Amino acid sequence: MNIEKLVRKNILELKPYTSARQSHTDGILLDANENSLGSVAEDVNNLEFNRYPDPYQKLLRKKTGDYLGVPENNLFFGVGSDEVIDLLIRIFCEPGKDNVIVCEPTYGMYKVACDINNVKVINAPLNDGYDIDYNAIVSSVNENTKILFLCSPNNPTSNLLDKNIIRKLITDLNLIVVIDEAYIDFSGDEGFAKEALHTDNLVVTRTFSKAWGMAGLRCGFCVAPEKIISLLFKVKMPYNINKLTAMAVAKAIDNSVTKDEYVKEIIEQRELLYNELKRNKKIINVLPSDANFISFKVENPREVYNYLEENGIIIRDRSNQYNFQGYLRVTVGAPEENRLFLQKLNEIL
Ligand SMILES: *Cc1c(COP(=O)(O)O)cnc(C)c1O
Image (cartoon, protein in one colour):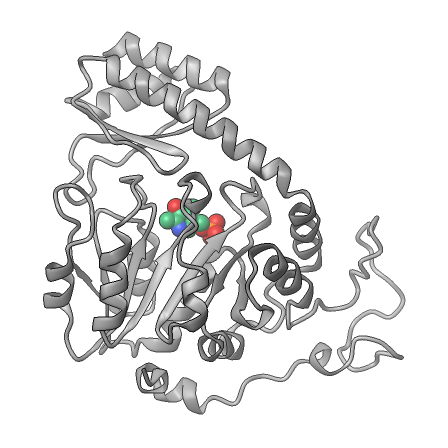
């Protein structure tokens, strides 16, 4: 597929900003108006805070590439995967003209990022089993459709989407397919990262915010064909990933066994929570989860939410989302948190 045809003309023609640290990282550096005397910030790891970080993200690309078994050239890092989502919209979608397809109920950031960029959003709803509806998507596409956002496992419905239907959409549609795999670690599925290496129009986003427990560092990334990676590098802010984040993420990858242990424990807790919720006859439905949260349906979501809140337990009221009436979403917490949540929930129900 000819990706260039999907890219905005001004982005194709864009002459990117060339930053000082692109050309030189050592020597007598008098090229970037940094403070050569040092940094006021405490720098226990000798990261040289007075110097701008690496615009090529080399450390992260190498570490993550080795870990996932994908080439560095197929990786791009953003300030959270939310940044990657925003950049993709800005690369492909002409404001006021192009559109994007989402399958609701799903993650709200796709629509917000589109709204900010004045890009129209078309909803091709998930079916009643909250899986993707091939025909709904295909019939929503028009000549100005540039991106299809899929989220698998999907937030807030917590299920993996049908992989064969996704593959069929990738081949049948002349647009960019983005699969948001923020929760893939909890699913037992390997996801689409490897397939993105040799599929022109596929982008897979991942994040260090969930299973890795690094939401506060703001680091997400995508696996994509090199042409799309080049476009992302062309439009990103030159120094989007800071040195502290890069160091912490690189060290975390060396310690990925800890991530695996967290995932194992969260899955155990998830099954426990699921079974307990299932036992409560006042709960209308509990959705099986491939993620680190569970959505469940009640008669009176606001009342339940408020009671939990009064007791210091904060969950998410998702009952106003499209085709998700009555649903509340609870993150799988630490054992004691889950126990207290269940106790208070059983009091109000
Ligand atoms: C939490 C979440 C993300 C993570 O975003 P970051 O910006 O990487 O923290 C992405 N997609 C979905 C569906 C999420 O729920």
